[in-house]
Image (cartoon, rainbow, N blue to C red):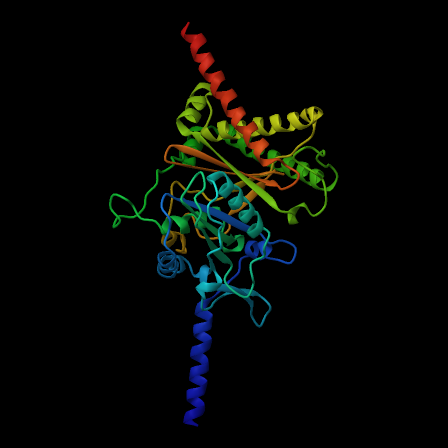
Length: 388
């Protein structure tokens, strides 16, 4: 009898432990990791010095894995068929890759090698039997860095804000490593103050406008998805299965001071200027390859972060139940070419992910750079005319 009680007690403790280590998988995460859709995020870090293999393994073990339980969990189904995140033992050898790199090549040749490697791993599926992430260390000097670190993270682990927070949590301040990492805050006006200053009629009109715009957008999207279709252009092949084709990545760097100069002149936001540069560059690319595509119908797809946040938050804060910017997937589609933008050290880095073999990523890159020069030169010329 005593032995049976001990067995039952051990069983209860194991069930409690399993329950503590399990977490429900959100509907968005399940959608992003299904038989019909599987999305991954590639984050690329460039280093001025070559990173030591043993140091990288130690950092992954001591720092990266401790950031979030998602990095040591897999998706499993419970007895009710619901998906749960379950903690497992992580075997780093299955996740951290050190690919063989040819020696004696020029930086430009290594640029091509890196692009080919990114295209290759971007098409590979992550094994569902282990945590959904990989890290690849490319120990070859490109034209941008001495070595390159590639994080391949499944989108079900979190969205860009969560995963960028995870990567930033691996870093320390250069001036004082003991202090937490901080980034500039964004000022958001108080809604209550704005609403109190308006009349009842103004508030009712604003609500009506919001509702009507939402209904119109929904109807337009429904028609667009079901009946209307974009024209075939130099940036849209219209072929089936395009999501399964290899991609090519091209990056470009702009001076943030020059972007701010354009922003001030046209009285817009930095996001407006960057969007204008990308749209103009894309249009120039389309016209260069096919002149009649200037009148083609093309739809842009924009990903929006739906969190209301003012600044960067640490992963520790994001994991709290009452977090202002919680961990997970909190993004939405607004209404195909993928463009990612990040700014640091007074530089604006733009990355273009294009369908390999259909879109000439290098030509597109030169068109976007030309668009930036056109906008910047127009600003300078306007300033010169105004001064005379």
